[in-house]
Length: 317
Image (cartoon, rainbow, N blue to C red; front, side, top):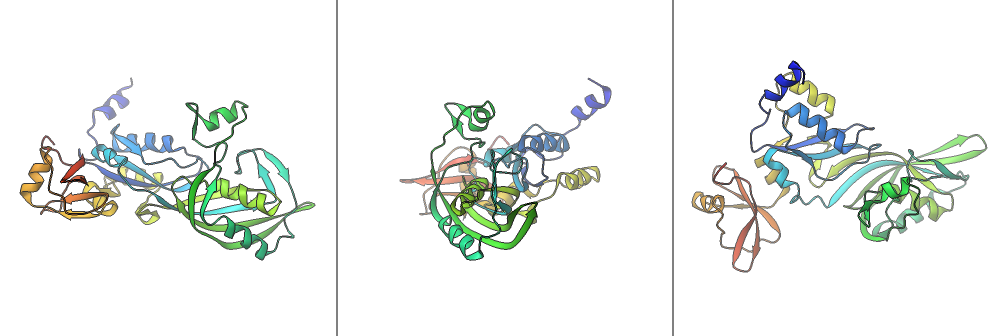
């Protein structure tokens, strides 16, 4: 180990033990794991994790938890997501996106806006979707993309999803020699588990010309948007300048992501020591906030108890 590296490892983390959320505006070409590794170095802590991956070709919102806030990640209800994307009609690829080998080409310039709109309507609402073959879904214990890249035939079952919005923002007809493609800039709002690549594939199939995704940007995950986010370059510059790096401290993150129940100081002490509270009729997971505005625990009610699913500030912290 070099002297410089040894010195870096002895430096304290740039966040406190509670930590918070870091919302990254991911650049294209980076895996989610790459982003986590980079942020661990920037923050000088190993306690960094992500709340769901984002494809390497995609840009935009990636939610990271830091220090104790990593324990929040499994409780965050990130069930809705929003994207801007570009779909190319007239060309299919093995991966359903621009990173894969082209498997078929067809003229698409003849398609009318009405025809496209009609097929988009069929892909909106509560539908069933077959995920992209190169997805991270496990098949007999192994990721689908690993099996596909090893040359195996991968068949994934259709899953229920909800596409609440699928709007065309712009259309561009692209001349490519003797073939004319159609590029659509779209906005999609959907449930977690929706593959935008698969929407591009299915739209192309419905129109009879094939399709794939050429660009993807995630603009929102649950309540977290690009307004919360900074790029890795911006985070590195902030670290160099000695500025705060977290997007939301743990208290702000909890109040942003969960319904709130105000509790007394005595109730806070009970929760911090592993005891439960009387229920008040709130559904789902919610946050218990003490008189000082501190998040004490995440609670869920069952029967005559409101019990902790996570103690944010245990007595020993």
